[in-house]
Image (cartoon, rainbow, N blue to C red; front, top):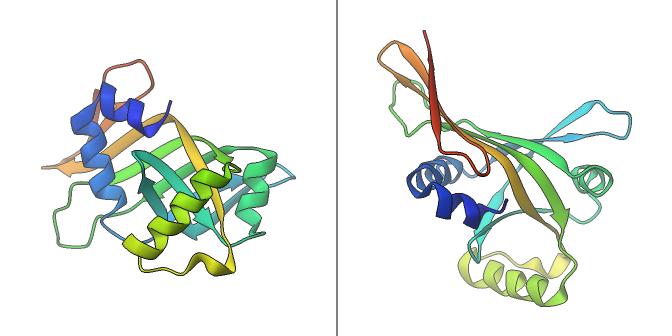
Length: 160
């Protein structure tokens, strides 16, 4: 399920998760190495043309991981000590390399115009499909988890 499906099925949840994911520039991406062990990488993500994309330097290990096994998990900790935030976002799914030259050209133009970034050195681009999108926050003395999975309503669980 694409990001646009999450927006259609659970618009308020999608908005809150997007706000968390974009509250800070960097997120932590987990991919699967060739030997099956996890790899974590700092990275930036982009909401482009209504979908969620990951970019990376050409030939980066995380890109090689995703080409071999497209499963990923991503965590963005937007909680700052002493400050209230919308919460931390965790998403999981698959990320597939974009090879369509028209999409890559539009993305490169967008990078130059909207992100003030020169993509002329090259980049790898991955489009995500989600299997879950979770927002975690503290309310009074409880951890609150708002959990979305494709085809389901957002459900909430709480822990003390």
